Amino acid sequence: MSANIKKPTVGTVLECHHLSSGYDDAVVIEDINIQISAGQIFAILGKNGMGKSTLLKTIMGFLKPTHGEITFADEPIGGVEPQKLARRGIAYIPQEAAIFQDLTVEENLRLGLSNDRLLPSGMEKIAAYFPILPKRRKQFAGTLSGGEQKMLLMARALMSNPKLMLVDEISEGLQPTMVENITKVLRQLATNDNVGILLVEQNVRFVSRVAHSVALLEIGRIVREKQLDDGTDNEQGLAEMMRV
Ligand SMILES: Nc1ncnc2c1ncn2[C@@H]1O[C@H](COP(=O)(O)OP(=O)(O)OP(=O)(O)O)[C@@H](O)[C@H]1O
Image (cartoon, rainbow, N blue to C red; front, side, top):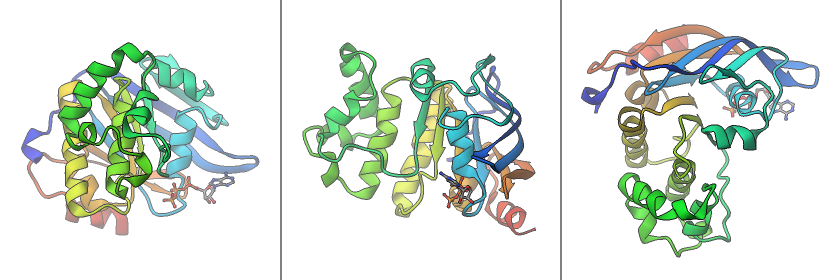
């Protein structure tokens, strides 16, 4: 797996510059500075309540920055509505299983499309990444297993050919084999499709295998950063970074 790590070489897709945000008067994330290139997987590690989801919600336009800037492909996007950002190429995969349980797999996937004519090419792409989903296209999404529902969430995001993916604790509650599967898919998306990926996670093992770069978030601030080395076991180093 790690032998496939591609060093990011191309332009910046996302930049947060002195970004702060929160809810009403409560500042939750403060002075966040990150830069993600096309083809790079950047992970933010943090324990419960540190502000990981708040960061993604701010980038995706659900919350307005109280300070600082966010740029996507060099364009400022702070406070731009989520639907507009989705059309511009940002896919958001929330922590909660945000699929429509009473719709079929295919109907859920169609919701990721701006134009129905793109369905065949979208399904082809999904078949390559998640072969099980086209086989289940007529099945109600609510009857999929928890892991399959996460796959469907990711697959729906892929239907729009995103340039940037914001992924909130995708590994939570998943079996190790499913986590491995998702690791492969994320790596391929970065390597083959040049997607920039921002993950927020608590799962050190998963992050150590999937990410190129890691930042540790503590009470809304990035306190440490680390580049992960190709082909070496990064898990112990990351676990130590979490502890100190
Ligand atoms: N809608 C909200 N209104 C007010 N405070 C909120 C809201 N959502 C989250 N918070 C607070 O913001 C802080 C950070 O929450 P956030 O969900 O961003 O953390 P997290 O790192 O994603 O945690 P977890 O891993 O548990 O999901 C917490 O103290 C939380 O209580």
